[in-house]
Length: 218
Length: 218
DNA sequence: TACATCCTGTACACCGATGCACGAGTTTTG
DNA sequence: CAAAACTCGTGCATCGGTGTACAGGATGTA
Image 1 (cartoon, rainbow over the protein chains, first blue to last red):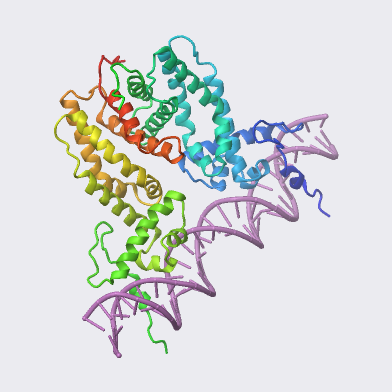
Image 2 (tube, rainbow over the protein chains, first blue to last red):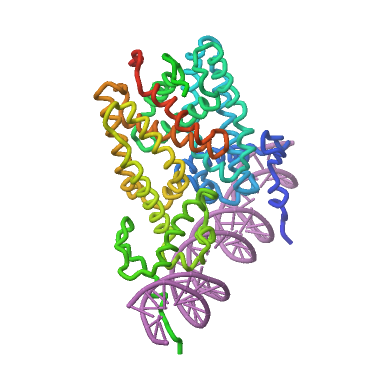
């Protein structure tokens, strides 16, 4: 007769973080379990950074943990990605929350971009992976807050005349995104120094968003 | 006794387009075979546009052709992608070649971007697929001409004072790329009208590349 | 017409990734 | 200390994609 049976069976459903969003913390969770969970989340980011389509095995290895241990915390690959991205974004929010948004719009924008770019650089690979694993809605949901903040700032800038109004905010927003991502990519391939990146980004965006002459309305 | 044997075996190495770049045209190639080859190449583009990681079976289906027929023309998935991308780029070159590059740099840039953007929009999905299937060197090789053209124009613009010189050409170049790609993506998700795209792109790039005041040299 | 060329499907071997089952060991926690 | 919680590995079933083998039917070309 086996000493214990189904330990894993019941344990598998550990981390009953019901909705994948926030954790409902399993009342009794051992300390090292939490550590491991954190390790895996971190490993997910770094592993995917190295290899955009890393397998679950790769990630587990990166975390220095057995593959099955990982499955003890997350039911499937998708749930793992989801959790990793959620945590990554949450961590980003903590930073972004501190950025002062009042005062001169251009200046605030500069600050927000500087802070955002680092975060983008860190988790853009993960984001890409998530896009082919999670429903688009879920991803948008997670970015909601960050996106709203940027959009709000852009909008205010337009109203105050700091930013041009002949283009929709949407376009300013995606432009900001793509330029930051482009910089991240350039850093990755070694064509750009990470420290210079924020400056390069501003050097493009500020002039682009700040009208001087009239811009040929077709 | 089989009537014919190894028909395919010898036929498999058909399309001996030695170097995958240009075709050395197998002396005797039946007309419908060429048509089919073209169909498959076209199907590769459209299939991958729909689903970034379409299988060989998917592509064959899209081309209205048996999977094995496809393997009769291309040994690997990689070779298929390579051929499709090469053809796509070659077709693009034919267009780009016609764009006048002399005269006012800003104006030439405007024209080049307008022509390029359409091409980017058409084959960016394929490009993405190629990036995880082909060696990076091969891809750069294929883009060589197009990239050189754009870089040359940018450089001339800088020398003539039309474009700002406080940023490396490299950065201007990647900025151009990412903004075009961003526009393509926006079109894809329906947030941007394809006809407006070129204008939106210029609206960002021209002011960004054309210095008016001094740009705070750090 | 006659033959080389091409298309077709089916069937199969192979590979890598996912996820489950089991049966231990090992560490925390009370 | 002892039970509960957790880790770990091996093995296995499954699935989807790739590429090969074979064998006959269809079609273009000379």
